[in-house]
Image (tube, rainbow, N blue to C red; front, side, top):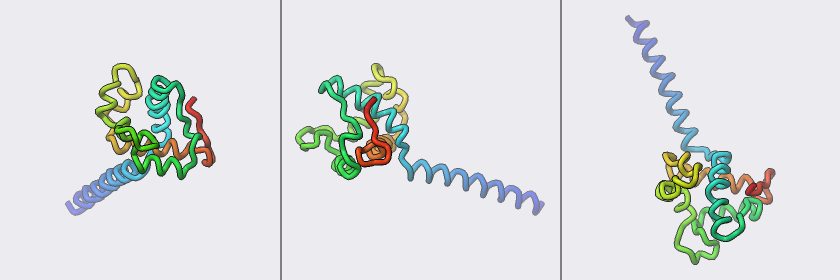
Length: 136
């Protein structure tokens, strides 16, 4: 009987460790590769449609991207109302899911996680990073 309890307690500890580890990983680390997919398929497409030009991650430095994302103002001058985070929100993704596969694919993702992923991509691809990235 004691062996059975020890075995159950050991299994519970192992399962709890895996769950805790998954939560910590999910909460603590943005995924720049997922951010790249969203940025290229949503942000770049919209920028090209609306302005005729894409905004490449390698157009700014790491510090500039971090400041831009921290300010959370879509228009760098601060004149426009939408925030950068508005474009990674579930509401926005819901509004374009019919015409954008990435928006549909990432529909269930938490807003903050997707915003962090996009930030990680632009910082990862900044012009002074080890891996400058274009929009293509």
